[in-house]
Amino acid sequence: MKRKRGILTRRRVMIMSSLFAVGILVTIVNIFVGIVTAKEAESLTFPSADGLQVTADVYLTNNAEKRPFIVLFHQAKWSRGEYRETAPRLNRLGYNCLAVDLRSGNKVAGVTNMTALKAREKGKQTRFVDAMQDMVAALNYVKETYNPPRLLMLGSSYSAGLALKVAGDNPGLVDGVMAFSPAEYFVKNGMSHTWVLESAKNISVPVFITSARKEKNRWTELYNAVNTDTKLSFVPNTAGKHGSRALWNKYPDSEEYWNMLEQFLKSYF
Image (tube, rainbow, N blue to C red; front, side, top):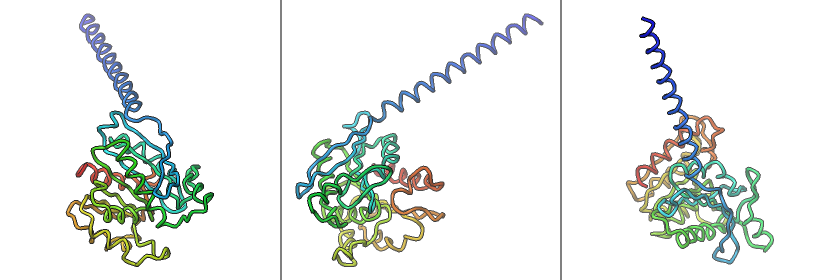
Protein backbone atom coordinates (compact mmCIF):
# COMPACT_ATOMS: atom_id res chain seq x y z
CA MET A 1 0.00 0.00 0.00
CA LYS A 2 2.80 2.41 0.93
CA ARG A 3 4.56 1.58 -2.37
CA LYS A 4 1.39 2.41 -4.36
CA ARG A 5 0.95 5.68 -2.49
CA GLY A 6 4.57 6.57 -3.23
CA ILE A 7 4.10 5.88 -6.93
CA LEU A 8 0.88 7.97 -7.04
CA THR A 9 2.59 10.82 -5.23
CA ARG A 10 5.50 10.79 -7.67
CA ARG A 11 3.07 10.75 -10.59
CA ARG A 12 1.20 13.75 -9.17
CA VAL A 13 4.49 15.62 -8.77
CA MET A 14 5.49 14.77 -12.33
CA ILE A 15 2.10 15.90 -13.69
CA MET A 16 2.19 19.15 -11.72
CA SER A 17 5.75 19.79 -12.87
CA SER A 18 4.74 19.17 -16.48
CA LEU A 19 1.76 21.52 -16.22
CA PHE A 20 3.97 24.18 -14.63
CA ALA A 21 6.52 23.82 -17.44
CA VAL A 22 3.77 24.09 -20.07
CA GLY A 23 2.46 27.20 -18.34
CA ILE A 24 5.90 28.80 -18.42
CA LEU A 25 6.27 27.89 -22.10
CA VAL A 26 2.89 29.42 -22.99
CA THR A 27 3.81 32.59 -21.12
CA ILE A 28 7.14 32.82 -22.93
CA VAL A 29 5.44 32.28 -26.31
CA ASN A 30 2.85 34.95 -25.55
CA ILE A 31 5.54 37.42 -24.55
CA PHE A 32 7.56 36.61 -27.67
CA VAL A 33 4.54 37.01 -29.95
CA GLY A 34 3.77 40.34 -28.30
CA ILE A 35 7.29 41.50 -29.09
CA VAL A 36 7.50 40.40 -32.71
CA THR A 37 4.01 41.22 -33.98
CA ALA A 38 4.68 44.96 -33.99
CA LYS A 39 7.53 47.41 -33.88
CA GLU A 40 7.60 50.69 -31.98
CA ALA A 41 5.74 53.48 -33.74
CA GLU A 42 7.98 55.86 -35.68
CA SER A 43 7.16 59.40 -36.77
CA LEU A 44 7.73 60.45 -40.36
CA THR A 45 6.78 63.21 -42.78
CA PHE A 46 5.77 63.44 -46.42
CA PRO A 47 4.55 66.32 -48.61
CA SER A 48 0.91 67.07 -49.31
CA ALA A 49 -0.27 68.32 -52.70
CA ASP A 50 0.56 71.93 -51.83
CA GLY A 51 3.98 71.08 -50.38
CA LEU A 52 2.97 71.20 -46.71
CA GLN A 53 4.84 68.56 -44.70
CA VAL A 54 2.40 66.08 -43.18
CA THR A 55 3.39 64.30 -39.95
CA ALA A 56 2.33 60.71 -39.25
CA ASP A 57 3.16 57.75 -37.01
CA VAL A 58 3.77 54.40 -38.68
CA TYR A 59 3.01 51.17 -36.82
CA LEU A 60 4.47 48.15 -38.61
CA THR A 61 3.75 44.50 -37.92
CA ASN A 62 6.19 41.65 -38.32
CA ASN A 63 6.47 40.66 -42.01
CA ALA A 64 5.11 44.11 -42.80
CA GLU A 65 5.52 43.77 -46.57
CA LYS A 66 2.95 40.95 -46.63
CA ARG A 67 0.36 42.68 -44.47
CA PRO A 68 -2.54 44.99 -45.43
CA PHE A 69 -2.17 48.65 -44.51
CA ILE A 70 -4.76 50.85 -42.77
CA VAL A 71 -4.32 54.63 -42.94
CA LEU A 72 -5.95 56.26 -39.91
CA PHE A 73 -7.43 59.77 -39.91
CA HIS A 74 -8.56 61.68 -36.81
CA GLN A 75 -11.60 63.76 -35.91
CA ALA A 76 -11.97 67.54 -35.60
CA LYS A 77 -9.57 69.41 -33.28
CA TRP A 78 -7.56 66.24 -32.68
CA SER A 79 -4.35 64.59 -33.91
CA ARG A 80 -2.74 61.24 -34.73
CA GLY A 81 -2.84 60.67 -30.96
CA GLU A 82 -6.41 59.41 -31.44
CA TYR A 83 -4.87 56.09 -32.52
CA ARG A 84 -2.20 55.55 -29.85
CA GLU A 85 -4.29 52.70 -28.42
CA THR A 86 -6.12 51.57 -31.56
CA ALA A 87 -3.17 51.14 -33.96
CA PRO A 88 -1.28 48.58 -31.82
CA ARG A 89 -4.42 46.47 -31.55
CA LEU A 90 -4.84 46.59 -35.32
CA ASN A 91 -1.20 45.49 -35.54
CA ARG A 92 -2.04 42.45 -33.46
CA LEU A 93 -4.80 41.63 -35.94
CA GLY A 94 -2.19 41.68 -38.70
CA TYR A 95 -2.56 45.18 -40.16
CA ASN A 96 0.12 47.82 -40.60
CA CYS A 97 -1.06 51.31 -39.70
CA LEU A 98 -0.25 54.93 -40.51
CA ALA A 99 -1.87 57.45 -38.14
CA VAL A 100 -1.88 60.84 -39.85
CA ASP A 101 -1.99 64.43 -38.59
CA LEU A 102 -4.35 66.32 -40.90
CA ARG A 103 -4.04 70.09 -41.20
CA SER A 104 -7.47 70.56 -39.63
CA GLY A 105 -6.88 69.56 -36.00
CA ASN A 106 -5.09 70.35 -32.77
CA LYS A 107 -4.24 67.93 -29.97
CA VAL A 108 -5.42 64.77 -28.19
CA ALA A 109 -3.91 62.24 -25.78
CA GLY A 110 -0.99 64.60 -25.24
CA VAL A 111 -0.04 64.47 -28.93
CA THR A 112 0.16 67.79 -30.79
CA ASN A 113 -0.98 67.91 -34.41
CA MET A 114 2.25 68.91 -36.14
CA THR A 115 0.68 69.22 -39.60
CA ALA A 116 -1.88 71.70 -38.31
CA LEU A 117 0.85 73.60 -36.48
CA LYS A 118 2.93 73.91 -39.65
CA ALA A 119 -0.12 74.89 -41.69
CA ARG A 120 -0.94 77.74 -39.33
CA GLU A 121 2.70 78.88 -39.31
CA LYS A 122 2.62 79.05 -43.12
CA GLY A 123 -0.73 80.84 -43.21
CA LYS A 124 -2.52 77.98 -44.97
CA GLN A 125 -6.24 77.32 -44.57
CA THR A 126 -7.13 74.57 -42.13
CA ARG A 127 -10.80 73.92 -42.92
CA PHE A 128 -12.13 70.37 -43.03
CA VAL A 129 -12.10 70.34 -46.83
CA ASP A 130 -8.48 71.53 -46.91
CA ALA A 131 -7.45 68.30 -45.17
CA MET A 132 -8.65 66.11 -48.03
CA GLN A 133 -5.41 66.68 -49.97
CA ASP A 134 -3.48 65.41 -46.93
CA MET A 135 -5.53 62.22 -46.92
CA VAL A 136 -4.90 61.53 -50.59
CA ALA A 137 -1.20 62.28 -50.11
CA ALA A 138 -1.05 59.85 -47.17
CA LEU A 139 -2.67 57.07 -49.17
CA ASN A 140 -0.35 57.63 -52.11
CA TYR A 141 2.65 57.75 -49.77
CA VAL A 142 1.79 54.33 -48.34
CA LYS A 143 1.24 52.91 -51.83
CA GLU A 144 4.55 54.18 -53.11
CA THR A 145 6.59 53.43 -50.00
CA TYR A 146 5.21 50.09 -48.81
CA ASN A 147 3.28 48.72 -51.82
CA PRO A 148 0.85 46.85 -49.54
CA PRO A 149 -1.25 43.95 -50.84
CA ARG A 150 -4.36 45.78 -49.58
CA LEU A 151 -4.76 49.47 -48.72
CA LEU A 152 -7.59 50.57 -46.41
CA MET A 153 -8.51 53.82 -44.71
CA LEU A 154 -10.34 54.58 -41.49
CA GLY A 155 -11.86 57.98 -40.86
CA SER A 156 -13.27 59.55 -37.70
CA SER A 157 -16.01 62.22 -37.73
CA TYR A 158 -15.18 64.81 -40.39
CA SER A 159 -12.40 62.63 -41.80
CA ALA A 160 -14.91 59.75 -42.03
CA GLY A 161 -17.01 61.90 -44.34
CA LEU A 162 -13.91 62.81 -46.32
CA ALA A 163 -12.89 59.14 -46.48
CA LEU A 164 -16.14 58.32 -48.29
CA LYS A 165 -15.58 61.31 -50.56
CA VAL A 166 -12.00 60.30 -51.38
CA ALA A 167 -12.94 56.67 -52.05
CA GLY A 168 -15.76 57.68 -54.38
CA ASP A 169 -13.74 60.27 -56.28
CA ASN A 170 -10.60 58.11 -56.67
CA PRO A 171 -11.51 54.63 -57.96
CA GLY A 172 -8.72 52.15 -57.35
CA LEU A 173 -6.99 54.23 -54.69
CA VAL A 174 -8.14 52.08 -51.75
CA ASP A 175 -9.48 48.57 -51.25
CA GLY A 176 -11.79 49.39 -48.36
CA VAL A 177 -13.19 52.17 -46.16
CA MET A 178 -14.11 52.29 -42.47
CA ALA A 179 -16.07 55.40 -41.46
CA PHE A 180 -16.77 56.21 -37.81
CA SER A 181 -19.52 58.87 -37.54
CA PRO A 182 -19.48 60.22 -41.12
CA ALA A 183 -21.87 63.00 -42.18
CA GLU A 184 -22.23 65.99 -44.49
CA TYR A 185 -20.04 68.20 -42.29
CA PHE A 186 -18.87 70.45 -45.11
CA VAL A 187 -21.72 72.88 -45.80
CA LYS A 188 -19.94 75.47 -43.66
CA ASN A 189 -16.97 75.08 -46.02
CA GLY A 190 -19.17 76.02 -48.96
CA MET A 191 -20.04 72.52 -50.12
CA SER A 192 -23.54 71.26 -50.94
CA HIS A 193 -25.69 69.19 -48.59
CA THR A 194 -25.05 66.17 -50.82
CA TRP A 195 -21.33 66.69 -51.44
CA VAL A 196 -20.31 63.38 -49.82
CA LEU A 197 -23.44 61.56 -50.97
CA GLU A 198 -22.73 62.15 -54.66
CA SER A 199 -19.28 60.63 -54.26
CA ALA A 200 -20.48 57.74 -52.08
CA LYS A 201 -22.58 56.53 -55.01
CA ASN A 202 -19.35 55.73 -56.87
CA ILE A 203 -17.80 53.56 -54.15
CA SER A 204 -17.42 49.92 -55.19
CA VAL A 205 -15.08 48.63 -52.45
CA PRO A 206 -16.13 47.17 -49.08
CA VAL A 207 -17.38 49.80 -46.62
CA PHE A 208 -17.98 49.73 -42.86
CA ILE A 209 -19.94 52.55 -41.20
CA THR A 210 -20.72 53.01 -37.51
CA SER A 211 -21.30 55.78 -34.96
CA ALA A 212 -22.92 56.65 -31.67
CA ARG A 213 -26.54 55.49 -31.55
CA LYS A 214 -28.03 58.98 -31.87
CA GLU A 215 -25.97 59.69 -35.01
CA LYS A 216 -27.43 56.96 -37.21
CA ASN A 217 -29.70 59.31 -39.17
CA ARG A 218 -26.69 61.38 -40.20
CA TRP A 219 -25.19 58.59 -42.29
CA THR A 220 -28.03 56.22 -43.26
CA GLU A 221 -28.46 57.89 -46.64
CA LEU A 222 -24.70 57.75 -47.24
CA TYR A 223 -24.64 54.05 -46.43
CA ASN A 224 -27.57 53.31 -48.72
CA ALA A 225 -25.88 55.23 -51.54
CA VAL A 226 -22.78 53.00 -51.51
CA ASN A 227 -23.24 50.84 -54.59
CA THR A 228 -21.90 47.53 -53.32
CA ASP A 229 -23.15 44.50 -51.43
CA THR A 230 -19.85 44.30 -49.55
CA LYS A 231 -20.84 46.76 -46.86
CA LEU A 232 -21.61 46.53 -43.17
CA SER A 233 -23.06 48.97 -40.64
CA PHE A 234 -23.31 48.88 -36.87
CA VAL A 235 -25.37 50.83 -34.35
CA PRO A 236 -24.80 49.95 -30.68
CA ASN A 237 -27.62 49.17 -28.26
CA THR A 238 -25.88 51.53 -25.84
CA ALA A 239 -25.39 55.27 -26.41
CA GLY A 240 -22.00 54.60 -27.99
CA LYS A 241 -19.41 57.22 -28.81
CA HIS A 242 -18.70 59.70 -31.60
CA GLY A 243 -15.85 58.87 -33.96
CA SER A 244 -13.20 56.19 -33.61
CA ARG A 245 -12.75 56.84 -29.91
CA ALA A 246 -15.61 54.32 -29.68
CA LEU A 247 -12.78 51.77 -29.92
CA TRP A 248 -10.99 53.07 -26.82
CA ASN A 249 -10.76 50.46 -24.10
CA LYS A 250 -12.02 52.80 -21.36
CA TYR A 251 -15.54 52.69 -22.81
CA PRO A 252 -17.56 49.64 -21.66
CA ASP A 253 -19.13 49.07 -25.10
CA SER A 254 -15.86 49.34 -27.05
CA GLU A 255 -15.68 45.57 -27.53
CA GLU A 256 -18.97 45.64 -29.45
CA TYR A 257 -17.42 48.07 -31.91
CA TRP A 258 -14.27 45.96 -32.12
CA ASN A 259 -16.25 42.79 -32.76
CA MET A 260 -18.05 44.36 -35.71
CA LEU A 261 -14.89 45.96 -37.07
CA GLU A 262 -13.05 42.64 -36.88
CA GLN A 263 -15.97 40.91 -38.58
CA PHE A 264 -15.72 43.41 -41.43
CA LEU A 265 -11.95 43.02 -41.76
CA LYS A 266 -12.06 39.22 -41.62
CA SER A 267 -14.88 39.07 -44.17
CA TYR A 268 -13.14 41.14 -46.86
CA PHE A 269 -9.41 41.42 -46.07
